[in-house]
Image 1 (cartoon, rainbow, N blue to C red):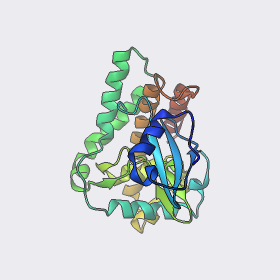
Image 2 (image 1 turned 120 degrees about the vertical axis):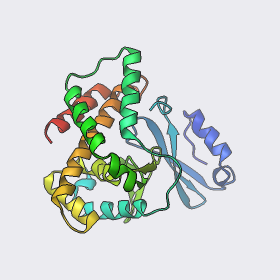
Image 3 (image 1 turned 90 degrees about the vertical axis):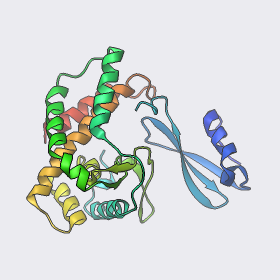
Image 4 (image 1 turned 30 degrees about the horizontal axis):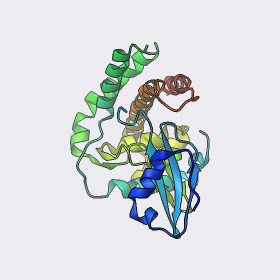
Length: 246
């Protein structure tokens, strides 16, 4: 049995999960890429699982294959399948998260980047415009389907469902679309909807603003209590750069 030696929480997980605790052949290796959590690939008697250990800020809170033309339609198809699943209890509200985290930033005395204000204004307008859409088109969403939350063994698998809940399907598309250029975004929309409409382009651009803003504020929160050594303020500035170029 091969286990990490420096993660006590992971060992507690192993003891609580019957498939792991009773396995006769158990192998574990860390998965790279997490900025707020630690993830492991676990092989238990030939069955594979992903185990995610929540980081310190869990309660308060790119350039790769995802950009390839052949990959985008596959990701869109996977999101369509997720969005067609039965509803669950619980709603994902990125706008509420942003407000809550901003209040927390203020309470901690942490400064806001000067470029955040115009982005917040655009996000507020998008929230007002999509109130009726959110009420009529709410579906089960992953709400964090960025490229490192996909595993691809020939079929793209979504992991890390921490933020899953009923929500706006365009937010899921925007979580992929913000890393794509205009042609990639159009391909994403056409693959998901079956056609490309101007109103969908406008909606996607508006929700990309929301995704970027959510991640900017998340990054600012993570700068106090996130993974040691990672430049969260620098990530926030990179995301603000992306928002300014939309």
